[in-house]
Length: 89
Image (cartoon, rainbow, N blue to C red; front, side, top):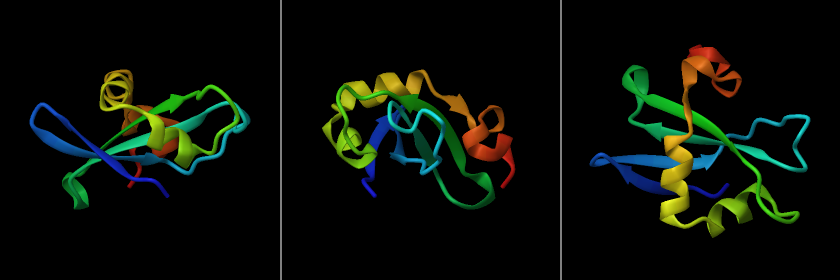
């Protein structure tokens, strides 16, 4: 699985496909942003629809840092996202 990192407000967030499969699996995939570990960790989710039929790993690897930052700013906290089981740890 492709894993990248970006810095947001001075903090390093790990970025990877979430692995969650949706009915739109052929068109879009979910991306998870992670900060920290354990009970204090933060997670955010967004969905991305790459142009063309690419695997999530290939599509994520091709994104620029600017594009990742834009996706981060459109992401939602885990407690509001089905991908994060609405915040259940």
